[in-house]
Image (cartoon, rainbow, N blue to C red; front, top):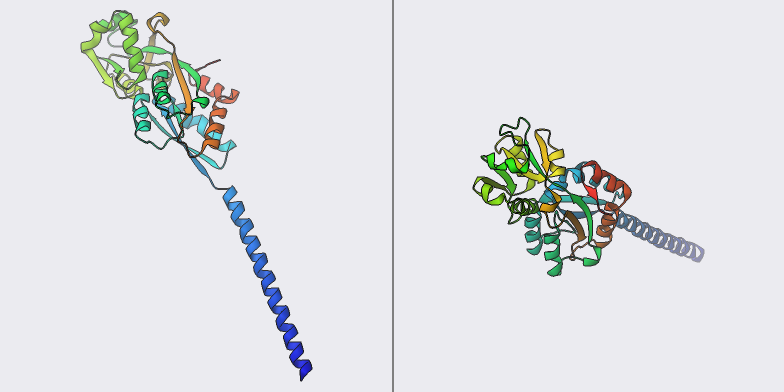
Length: 272
């Protein structure tokens, strides 16, 4: 009888130990799986970029970066740089700001909203005069703008292209002559579309925008002497970014030779 009891106790003890071992193993496996899942968690970067950058990013740059960094997604918001500046000042959820002019970037830097050490002047663009494909007003040069019933430009209050347009026209002594015929768009894309569908007889946009629309023709480039500074595109990390590691990796990617080649394909000039 005693032998039977001892045997039962031995079996029970062995089963208990085996159960504990399986539980520990299960817990270990669960921890390992959790760690692996954590490593694979995706991060979404929020890009606030000038409207003129939309095609380059959506068609080529973002897909390429995401392919090389499968755990990072990039969501772009594209608009006039002045509008984006205001949104960032109001708490917009953004990791990267890519402006079409230095003014907006400088303003945010002064307000301590930009990680200044990450800022770089990455690209240059050109201000060009465009007309509809059929050019009904026969505009061939800047001095012909006095013939235009409607001249489309970006709103100088918030659109860098509009600020450059106003500066160029003022220095060319044309601003007063065209001021009453202006149609001011909320961003360069809107200006481009007005000229493309002949709602405006001429417009001033960036060379990169004109290149993306087959329904407009570039007839002239703003003389370099009409602009105090070249059209520079600075980019930087927003100081409150929740993903600084990934944001800095994205900035580094934008400065690679392959990214610069893509920008060139879309009409931008990489800064050296």
